[in-house]
Image (tube, rainbow, N blue to C red; front, top):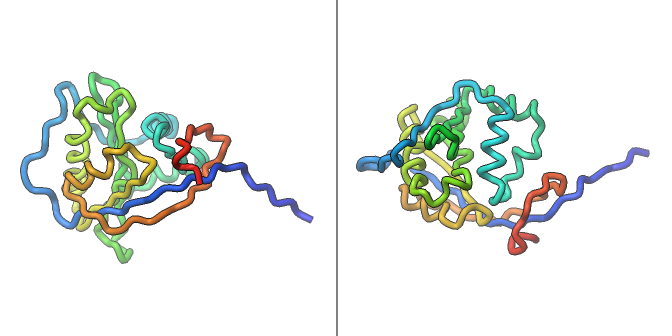
Length: 195
């Protein structure tokens, strides 16, 4: 008789809002703060990716990639449809975004998804967010995007949804999800998100 081992997990209840943008935004992009630049990481290593993902997401219950093994992360990073872009301020990482392109063979051909977007804690509130988001949007459209998507949830920074809407995304739908966040990850989950 085989035993079924279930990993201890916290049940986290979030409302996930799915958004889309059907055309590039009009008007000039806001400038990044002085001393800032964005670089596409040609060959992102698993440790560097984990540093970015874990540091940006530590306060927002970003858990899926924390729970993934190194081989799974390496496969994602090695996929030519995925690109990692890092915001640097004064030479140090200050944020990142991940673009995921849908293959031309799928029903959503030409769709680019902003899979992850965020600032490291020290960069939150510095005025970089709006310009960095526009950079992500412009990068997606510049690479042949037909439709741009992103989602956010009630575990994210409270300005995330308003910022996406202000950038030109439209709301498609909001759904309630229950996430089984493994206890071993050690994430601090706000009490209002516990199911």
